[in-house]
Length: 222
Image (cartoon, rainbow, N blue to C red; front, top):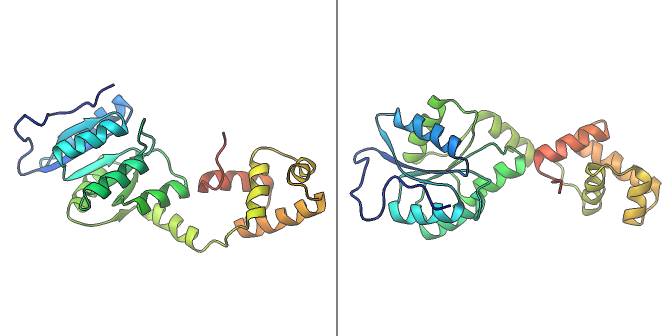
């Protein structure tokens, strides 16, 4: 589907004197909801919408919005790729990752790619509007809960390659005997790796290890 844009290159600029915002999200209802929030702000205007990463890149180049809201899981170019590409071509671009994805890895990759804020879609209308204003004025916004998780991530003891291999097998539901056979090690060695894993992750069971690995984006199913 083509980009959903509020104006084309040949049309007169809209939102003069206001913060010009672009919304890139593959879900029409979510785009409409975010657009409605922005429409209620007297100092903002939506100047472009896009339903996939490729259209978003074209719309950004056409409109050069003041702030762009980007979903992580865009069709085509995903949110990370889109942010990296826009920042390469427009170094001063101000981009906000607005998404339902909340693993530590998603947060870390988004900020490293150049996003000036990371917000979840359960953010309030007031918080979203304030974040747009702050990013427009040059600030980097990280919600308190997100900041705490990033701090925790930075202080984590890194897992070894073998521990990561064992963790992947655990997440996929493998028993110790199956892990040993898969990795060509003894069951006793698997138990030692699990003990180290639990200590490093701060968990007490395989179930907790699985949940934490998924939340932090250490391991993905599929």
